[in-house]
Length: 165
Image (cartoon, rainbow, N blue to C red; front, side, top):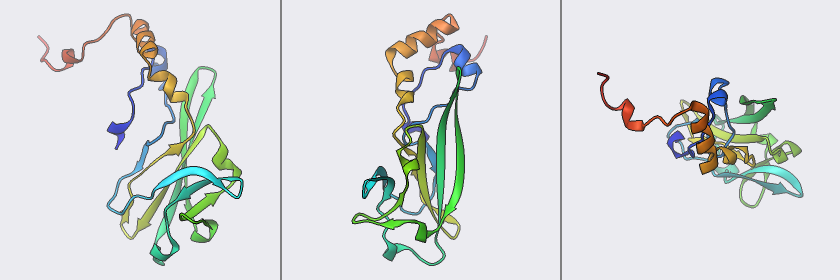
């Protein structure tokens, strides 16, 4: 799943400070249950995490875990913090397309979410959905050039493939 994420280019200082960026599709789980289709939108004018989950498909022993990722910027330090909490089915709102988690927190541009379905020892494969776009400035040709300059040289990929002499 992670190999679908875009390449990001960090400067030497950013890499030294363990730069972390919130972006869509950051994997939080990988399993054999059908993935939940989820996206951000609104229910009755309130921000929501919408899903394709139907009440009829939920079994009594099913569990749902909500992963929340938050982008934090402290001076030049950029990090992503993750939390998870169990969600009860009665916390979700029925919509025409499926169940939704509704609340103003889902409007936050510095957060992302993934709802994971767990049934016995199995789970769904899920990635983060977010409105955060900060990562995009680290995916450009300009970001690559800035990163290269910060290291003082370009390191060739094939330099790592051949044995040292």
